[in-house]
Amino acid sequence: MPDTPQIICLGAMLWDVIGHSPVSLRPGDDVAGRIHQRPGGVALNVAVALVRHGLSPSILSAVGQDSPGEALIADTRRLGVATDLLWRGGPLPTDLYMAVETPDGLFAAIADAHGLEAAGPSILAPLQDGRLGSDDNPWQGTAVIDGNLTKQTLAMMAKAPFLARASLRIVPASPDKADRLAPLLDHPNAVFYINRAEAEAIAGRPFSGAVDAAEAVVAMGAARVIVTDGPQPAADAVAGQPTVSHCPPQVTTRHVTGAGDAFLAAHLAAELSGFDRNDALDRAIQAAAAHITAPPETGKDTA
Image (cartoon, rainbow, N blue to C red; front, side):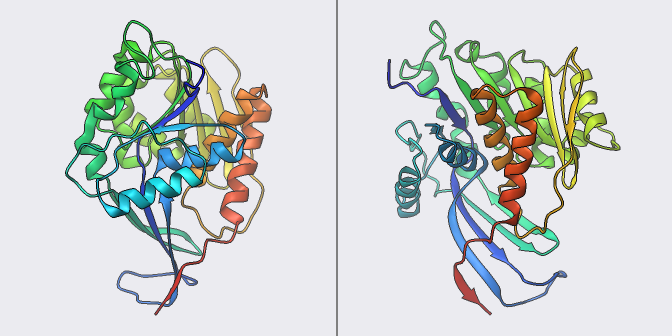
């Protein structure tokens, strides 16, 4: 099928509602700031960033049969991401993510992904029913998989024949969800993109930096692990090969939501363009730095 997508992003597609405070916050503070709403979710953030790199991803996710869902799909299409494979069979409203950011970084966030969780493996139907592939004719391409999927769904994907020929790019979404990825650790075609806190959640112990963290998760059975550590060096560890490490540039952070997604998209795009591990890691770091230094989108004023 000539129109079969070569990149699919599986996981969260929702509305991001991000509040930006100009000052540091304490619990209970009420300050003037800026609020904006935009299409978000790890899978969708990666897909949108891949479009900026000239790629044409599709997204597999769950979107409610409500007006916010219709608006989200329309905006996503305008951003260049194919939405024809979405699952919309559930009764729940479209998912939502709410966060508050300060000059110090992320202050707090709540993700309401009940629609995606209720859909479970239903979002994978196009990979099984022939639209993309099947157990007997597996889809061949790159699948970005985020940890917002349920543990049961991720466990099924780890052994699924319909993903046997796919290259998997795995991202936890948060340290609290990192343990969901355990069934995928020994998948031979998986590349993990995690931060140091997520590596510590997977391994159950602290690490001094990204190199130690990446090599430790590889020692647990992963084929390849890429670890970021904020302003500290990032690392790319591969079983049986030397670990690559780069230090991010010193920048002033303006907002953090989506930085890891920008990193993954830039890294994947670089590798699909033929860049080696060293250059791909450098490009990913530069993309994340550009993301966090860009002015946040403006929305409505609050007081």
